Length: 437
Image (tube, rainbow, N blue to C red; front, side):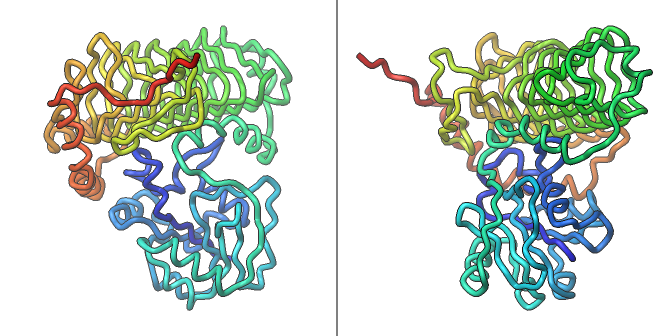
């Protein structure tokens, strides 16, 4: 069977993370959302088995990033039956796909989450009409409750990450830790909840605590002395931990450099937090550099509900602990202090001001003296991206440059609104708790 993962209009609610990648590439637990969907339907990673329908501005760069995945290809869709799945849907544990004899539509909380259709329906998939496509299919074919849950906002991923690390650990059933590795580390808790790849380097004077959940250490990880890792936790391939205090519910993607205190956070990949500073209840994109002592607040002083400015407008989270969400290729200066519920776009340059920085930093801007202003030119930003990616053996390609040029125009209005607020010297108008007598 073939699988096609699609994006609906609600992916805009997960910016800035979805500005530069499809929804199915976002991380949850030990894998991406797309991998969870493919695993649930038993669709392997072979060529021509997986496809996707994504927003138009992502097509070229996605074809470069994953040449084995077919992107927005009507000819591929027309070749036969295909399972179509919404990338915001997370299948339940132990998911059993409905009978392969279709067509049928799978519902999660009463909304279409997946469907098995023939080529005559698949070819009508349109990147700008996924919602209406599912509604039409659901009205024509039998509906089956498939369970699972939806991802609506970036903080949904962060809040559920610990539970999915535990679930992924149980479903993987891989080997654990060797006696050689145990000889160099201090283990607190059950040894069967620790999995360390044989190529990982674990230096002496490191502590792994599995009393609150499993710990997974991927290939070629280097854990340096005086690091403490607490489960549930996933450390991705080629990542290095420098005297870090990794608390529970943390997923760190490939090739990151992490130090200081990190709690309940997802770091997508290729990002740096070498030095001291606190990062909590956050989602950090790729190629982000957090300068020394950069810290974020993840709890209001009055313990009230946190609001996050998505695209400039405050959105209630329904949660008391929410940190920051930072887009790709953004950098913070030494000593930057990020407020509770901060959203920073892509390719931003955030410098400290001795006080809490603005909660809303649109893409391609800079924060100077505590105010949002124009950032570097695009050519300067691209030159920096080429240097940063080259240090990890990667290339900032022409397709990526075109992606960011398009995003620059797409986010122009959001920047202009932020500049106007800064010019008017108005404080951020975020809701505050009112005293009750």
